[in-house]
Image 1: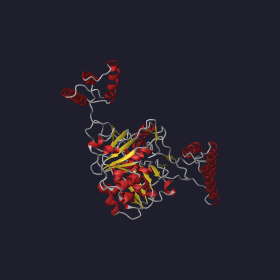
Image 2: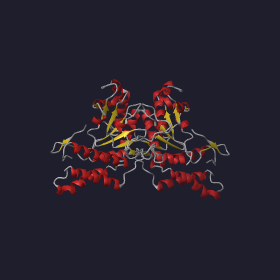
Image 3: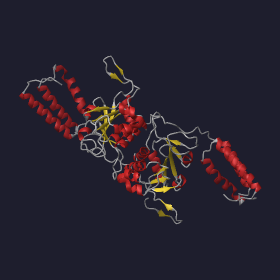
Length: 266
Length: 266
């Protein structure tokens, strides 16, 4: 959807950067619940154009509305077509999803980099779409030949029972998982401790351990120190964590002064 | 799950190539339907180890069974734990899924190459798992700190309403979409036509077009021929398609003999 502009001849022009995400085309879907759940799954990953080809139970469908929840506006904008040919008429690149091999001379794609591929075509100003067949039977060969390529999911050969809405959701995820999309949030702003802070922390720990008699026999001290340091270095501690750790060392050492005189446990 | 062997000290050893797929850990799931649908989604992409932490409505749950359909055996093997700590106790690498930023010093991962990452850890003999929180609230910070990393989906910031089973299914897809997994089926065994076949086909077409008076004015014939050839070359036709095309040319030429004497349409 989104805003459209037209050229002098009245043709709809997609601005080069306002790329249109792929349309999801449900061909002869059976259950309204699945249509509603599909739309919800779509919108979770930024897809909002639904096309329906001859939905079995007519349209609109209250079961679909009930399942769509917050994605109802997308459902209300869905376009309905009598046949698949009409639903893909304005598209330039169409994928057909199927879990079984067809005897058709159409390239078969895995899901790898599908998001990037569609995004690249879309940025070029072309309209893309993906067809999903009815729940039980899937797309017919007549549907599939409308497509530029077959899209296959890496499904478990021993258990192929993917729900329609789930299949749509995974496609939407593929779209959103493209490298061009920034992550929703990143690491917290961890401020790693400086090497100096870490070394001082280790010296503090080692000094307290030495006072406690931990390094026994003394000849093994250098080796023991190295072994103690390793995990603390691997932990990539933050400044705050180093401060906390030094507080813990201090506290433990104090406690030792009050209680047992020596502690040789690791 | 799977067979285990033990070393001399009685420790469980995973044979290097018998890699164990990640366990899915549902922490305090609420709806049985979601547990059943999650298992079905898991098995579609080859995951079969479910762990449940304190499911709200107890266990077993008939609503879960009903939704699991053919994946019921996986559901029946699910292990139930009182607290998350117990559910992850035997794992070496754990992910926590969350859609919102936490103020925890835990690395945040996107979904890219997660399948490969987990497979690599698994091949090394370590057990992996992924935690999903309850439907409404998600994981608590106390749950998340049990994990090695946070896993974030590229979710639509304007519509974050991912169903629990769907989230599990997308994780299972990530696992199965790894490069190490062969595709379920490939292109049909297209036998491309030889260049010679294609050239003969074009010569056949051009000869018939010439007889029909198509190339007018004759001076433009070389240019017109080139323009006609281009799309046929791009189509990467198979041997069978070339045979069919030649039949069509023959048939059209015959028809022309019977009817109109010249045909200058493209």
